[in-house]
Image 1: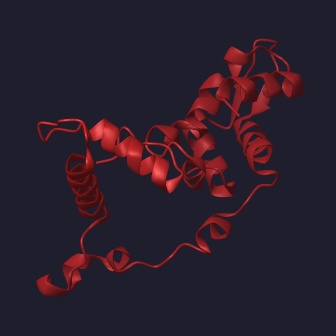
Image 2: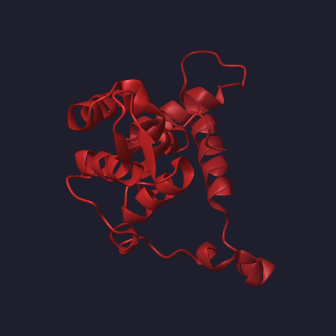
Length: 166
């Protein structure tokens, strides 16, 4: 659901105009710029995320009808509209895989350090670029844009290309 649709839902629930609520809904979904798939929800779509919204926007807003509305209620409703319930942070993290780098690779001997996720993505892009050039019937000068490679990788993985991903 787009933030504007959430804002219209807030109007139906508490009155006022969509503009009264849009900044809160934009904030809750702001992680989409970094992870434009459902994983972005892990950052604010949970109970502690609603407290973050309250901290950023204050405990209440006064809508254009003059009604005072709890920002946490607005955030909780947004999360429930998206998720069907209000998950805890534990709900999100319970099944998070534990990777070596989570503990800090600086603690490992250099020869035992795994590549960082950024390095893994770079190596993947290099492999795809090489295969595209090697297998292409179209004469390429060795240059395939990063955007094209990311779109191909996303298509293979069944995700969306992330323009901000390094």
